[in-house]
Amino acid sequence: MSYCRQEGKDRIIFVTKEDHETPSNAELIAEDPDDPYEEQGLILPNGDINWNCPCLGGMASGPCGSQFKEAFSCFHYSKEEVKGSDCIDNFRNMQECMQKYPELYPQEEEKEGSSQAGSTSGSVSATATTAEGSSLAPDIDSTPSTSTPESTVSSDNTSPTDNQPAS
Image 1: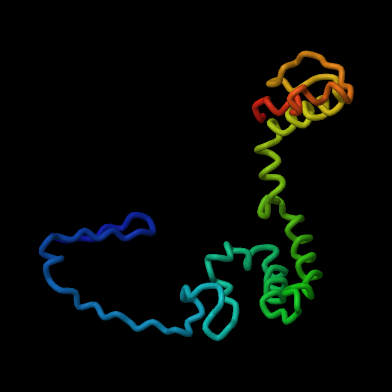
Image 2 (image 1 turned 120 degrees about the horizontal axis):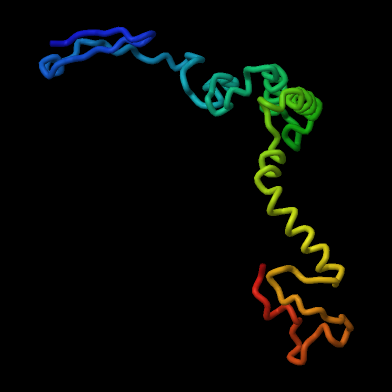
């Protein structure tokens, strides 16, 4: 016994084994190859840009959609030797627009910087003090040494740090 049930906006249809045993009489409609809303990739068969392509990640819509379309169109149709070199102003306009909406268009440096902020700051300061010669990084022997041209090369012609593990 099959039946339907409505839950909010969804319609749920329960079918029985007998319902599935009878062949379907549904007719499939042939797809229109020129349908601009059909998923056909970024470039349509006629060479136009498919602004509905999921590969654009919604960039063609939103507060900076028109600037994105202008910049991307300019690049796509560019005939310059260095493709897109004539589109710098369009990309600058798009970037300026995106900077007005950082919550919608986060910059890559912000993503990377926030995840690496703790680990990078420690290694930078350790490197800086090592370069001065006043101390060594924590995972290397911290015995103070005097640096003279003769003492920088050991008797076997290797640098004192050659035998140290990489950090």
